[in-house]
Image 1 (tube, rainbow, N blue to C red):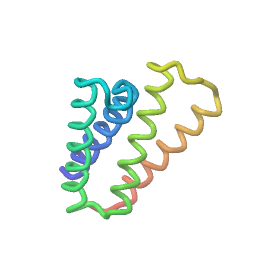
Image 2 (cartoon, one colour):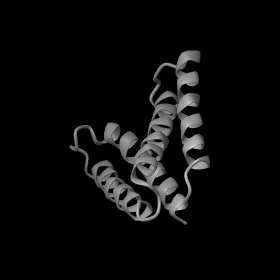
Image 3 (cartoon, rainbow, N blue to C red):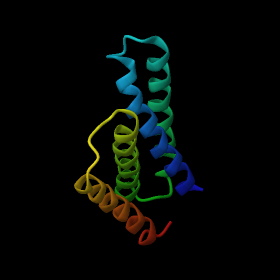
Image 4 (cartoon, helix red, strand yellow):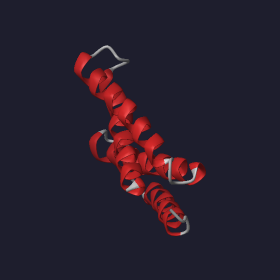
Length: 106
C-alpha cells in the first residue's frame, strides 16, 4: 500500500509542477487552487508512504516520478525540445526508480 501511495504522490507532483506553468505566477485562480491542492496532497501522501518506506528511497522515487513525468509532459504539452539525449536521460531516471523499488524491502 505504501508504494501505491508513493506512486500517487509522485503523479501529483507532476500535476503541481506542470500546474505552476499555468498559474502564471499564481495570478490565475483555478490553476493556482489546483496546483496548491496537488502540492498539499502530494506531500501528505509522501509522508504517509514514508511511514513504511525508508526516507531516502521514498524521497528519491517521489522526485524521480515527478522529474520523469514533468520532463515528459513538458515535451508533449509545452513544446520543450525532444531529442535522443533527453529521452536517454529520462530513461536513466526510470531505471533508477525501478532499481530502488526492486532493492528496497518494504
